[in-house]
Amino acid sequence: MKPNFLVAGVAKCGTTSLFHYLEQHPEVCIPKKETFFFISELYENQSEDVRGRRDHSRIIFTEENYNQLYAKCQGGAIGEVSTCYLHYHDTAIPHIKKTLGDIPIIIVIRQPVERLISGYKHFTRMDKEDLSLESALAAETSRAELRWDFMWQYKRLGLYADGIAAFQQHFTKVKVILQEELTNQPIAVMQELFKFINVDDSVVPDTSVKYNISDPQQNNFWFKYLFQNKNVKTLLKPITHLLIEEKTRRKIMHKFRKPSKKGENKLTLDTELKTELMNFYRNDIIRTQQLINRDLSSWLK
Figure 1 (spheres, rainbow, N blue to C red):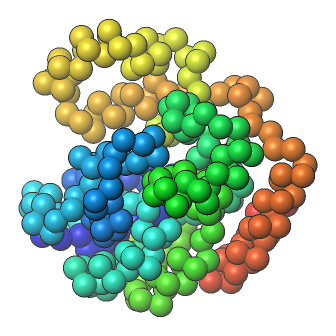
Figure 2: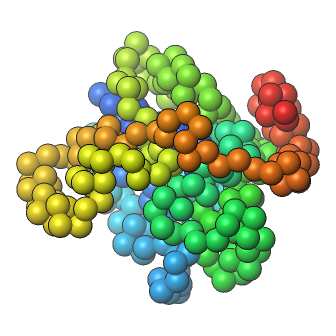
């Protein structure tokens, strides 16, 4: 078995929540979030001794291993949820078409400045970014030349139009959803997606948990104690892995993670930087709304 639908991205736009909501459906099989298989050539012959490199153990490099991953799926809607294929559409699309054919494609996007801030906060929370936002944006080109992972391309990951146009050109069914709708109307969005991938659209997933929140957890005592304390993790990890299946462990962890209180840990852009970013994204937003036939005027404010 191979995937018969694919989520092509984008990072920090709700793909983790989307993955967990999709996999709750009894007719949907997604054995692993993110294989990187269709862009794996970008990671070949790449060392992992730099902060910006991705762990090779999380990448599927061969078609044999890719097929083995999906061998456990017994039919229905079989999918892969990715954060990278829209960004690397030129590399990914030929491989997807050759391996999977003309399958339905789902893309989830977000107001690009909000996405950028979320991506930056995600890495500062994980102690993977030690530059200020302005310095990190200035370093994007040099980091790309050093082959840092795409997730450090905070600014360029918010450019959607070229990728959407490319997928629309090569695939018959392409559905673009907005992160704000997934957040505010999750059940309606998921039931629409269930219909899109041809499974029972009356299923109501549990959308009570918001996954992969970027906010820091310094004031979240239980999260810090249970999930960030090395001694506790060393003690509990073997027991929980033996007694609790992976998807339940993930849900418990994300259930404990809390968003910051209103105004707390808020990253505020100065007027000059915000204006610069909005000018950078303006034409892409206008083109994106034309491609998906949606009003994105609120993104321009």
